[in-house]
Image 1: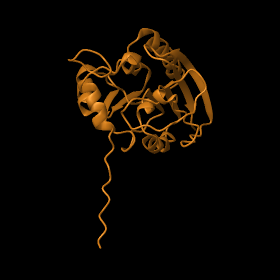
Image 2 (image 1 turned 120 degrees about the horizontal axis):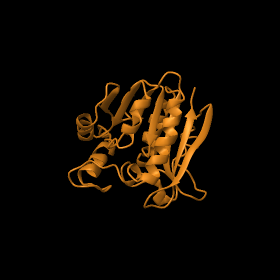
Image 3 (image 1 turned 45 degrees about the vertical axis):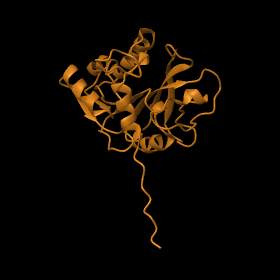
Image 4 (image 1 turned 30 degrees about the vertical axis):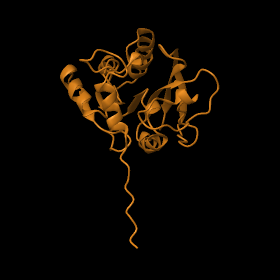
Length: 221
């Protein structure tokens, strides 16, 4: 008896994220792409831009920055000036096409990529701002191996305020781990991300939600 070939299920992330933007599930006007309050609330955005800008300005030669999950680019547009090259990546092709029309600079590039599956652009510093919280553990594990190619990683995640069990698994694109009283911690199982140094740059209340947005700088190599 011939065994049926097992059908490999596709990664759901691309379709889920496209639907979020198409249906304005993170808010915003129907006619625009909007990455949510966390990317637009001044009390959240301004401190983040300040600490990341200071870090990027500390380099003698401006770094090549890879923004992995750039969203509507409301934050990234403020950081481009501090980079030698700023490579902004998102999984939604329509969003990237929109960003290409809206934001232009000689040192700015946009790419439609799945950061879990596709090869990442080369760079000095990777930025992931509230991105991993939307991904399954399987996708994060695939991405973590690629983060070792960068010298620095700046990671922002939505975490519970109290002690929590990290890295409870979720289905990609269907909410975040906060609903399970969990959040992403790269150094913990099953990711075991190893960095030379780890520094918390910022912790601010999540606007309109419980928990905090924590930004961590990893020196990888």
